Image (cartoon, rainbow, N blue to C red; front, side):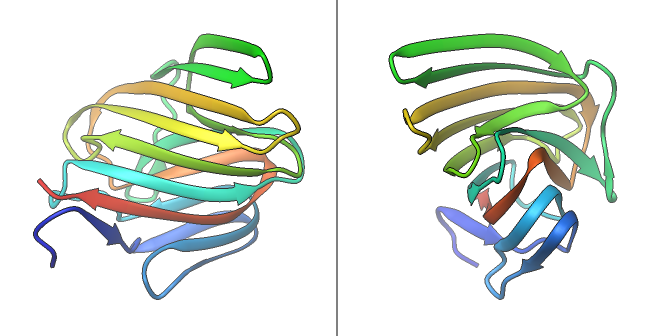
Length: 179
């Protein structure tokens, strides 16, 4: 095992709703037309912080949300995810703060590509979990998005679920950050 940098992690299992999802030999997950995708067993005591890299596209515009999970079950406690976002598109900038039972992760516009890099802080620790994502898509005006959120439950998680309403296809990889 490497002593420095980021370590690509292989999920112990995956679950999905959609056409297909498979774990590649190196640990990344390729998925096609999925409305939800869960990666189990990627968070552990080996790392405190993680980076999630996603490349994809959707058939229709959709928000992509995250829920943290343990033992194959999502935590969907009411009003436990608080997030803020800022979107710069064309010449406009918009932002908002939202409290829900899932957290905003990125926006994917219809028939457009999207790239996302997310950082998840301390999900395996029994404390509230924080995250931040930076995203770009190639819709007709090109937009840049930033999300920052917290999940206020003091629980330990070993995975996460991304869900959307737009049949997301692409590839996702989870990396552990060496301590």
